[in-house]
Image (cartoon, rainbow, N blue to C red; front, side, top):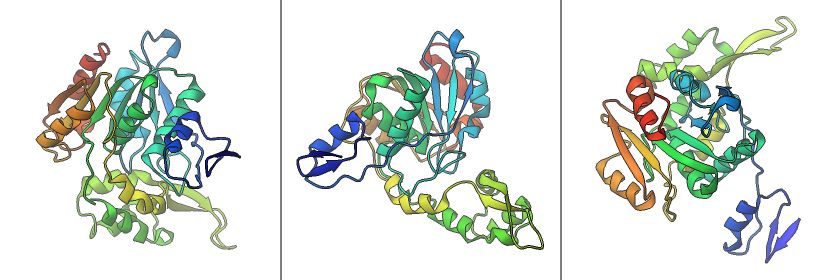
Length: 303
């Protein structure tokens, strides 16, 4: 252990993490080491002439959400679709802050030997991308944020987490059964289908009579997401500025990025560009071709 003033710092703490704590009030630092995130790679790094493109999903999502976009850009870039902690196939943790998620992403870049990247994030992933850009600006070439602002947001999803946690999966035989159990709390069918993408089968031993019976389980860490959700709603990057090129894409029918948000973003992301597409919050899923064209124009290749 290393002592800085009255603070005790674990030897695994990265230099950037130590720097963030040096000006903090004297206290003991409980440092959670970065997690090794699950990722999928499309495209050949050896033939790429540009930085790799990393894709970050939103709340309740996974790297699988980027199918069409990832496949297209893999023709021009090495595309890396990431599962954030407590999502997809990535490890679970009781803690989930934006600083920790940015550290997770840095660990992934170091593991893959990526000195500089393009980074694209949607919704929650957009906030993680902004955090990474301002926390590790030297590791980023271009930033793309999809339908997410800097500000804090009201609680819109705790009721969904509660509904998912309330389902007794031990009594469910199929995804259809779970879908029916969620209808009263989550009436929108498309939302339920998206959430049900987190439902997987696992082999468990219920009793001696039905050994190795297949059971349904949530792959996503619902308990941790509920506990950390209030902090995920908070603003990011409010005390820093980012000067490299950035693109903010919003859905015209979404209320996630409003006109006043654009003015706020400009004060922190100095070289920001803005684009709007005729969609709701799921911009890349609702208008994939238009989305690809906007991103390709910003990156300078990949149409």
